[in-house]
Image 1 (cartoon, rainbow, N blue to C red):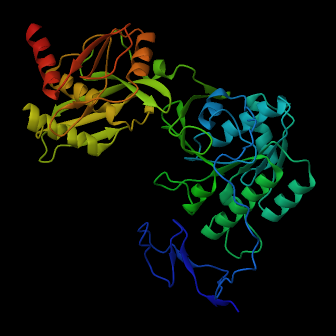
Image 2 (spheres, rainbow, N blue to C red; image 1 turned 90 degrees about the vertical axis):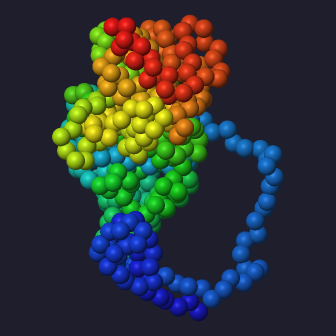
Length: 456
């Protein structure tokens, strides 16, 4: 016979405990540990012979070729890997007001007009509010099935009685609740139970499921971490609310490439796709300005050119300030240390500011060389050579290490009118339409700006 035991879990991160304590050891938050309303049944043992026998296959077994459903929003389809896969589940998260509901409403509106059966269930807004947004987006004539509900039981019952949709959107999973649990909506147990049941339903109906998730103050999707493991695809909507650009990034995708991005521009008519994002993230290239370099990066399979701005200024404080926007502050500290120890540039008494233009966040180590070039250009007050792109990884000894997908980066730069590329030595280059300058050590970048300064 199963016995019951007390079980406690953190309502912020989902960590489990056998007894209550004030602070969660996993996320360091206070007063977030609560006792689960339903005690877990602990079986004494599982005997053999009472379960269903599994049918095993081999790796060369025949697989079904799923026909994807295109959303009609090219950037969204790109991030998903080519559209929605029937029976799959997608989780999208982002800051409040970033545009999650807007892009999903645009997607279901276009898909419904194309003949797909789409259902939109909102737990946050009334149907009248969603209709107002649809009119603003010009989608009021789209045959989307719309409902406002929070009860998981009502949602499952209604969908099983109706004709199965091609796409089901739940906005948001933190507002749903299962009435067999006594905990409040948004708690770990409710989010886990509701997600599991909706994913089961989507596989049963063979429809694509899209879950909207709230995020914490740290930018992570609220609720248990297991939620991201349960779904097939996890998308994050990024962007600074001070900029009009929005980045949709895939951090997990069982049916496509990870780290793929889609770029949108927020307008009064909703989110507009940006087909050539490199031109948007570049500043005014007509004027030579010191402290700015152009980095040729890769976001998933897409080459992307972005302007990196650096400023080095004397400081009157005992501890000079280091401010970074759009890049890793620890990598900036490493580059400053390499410039000091390997290149003889003393920056200890200077304030350093680094900014990635356009609100984009760069995670590639390949941006090291472009960051160093922007900083050295600011120190020497000499602009980076005109129409030049820069990329390469910097080692602790000052050597410049090669990076992948060099030709894709160079082709994107040549398409936008750049004529010179400063890249690591030994890179495999097949692109002949752009002049290549190979460097081996970071000190060569310093000498480049010193020589230009002497010449001027």
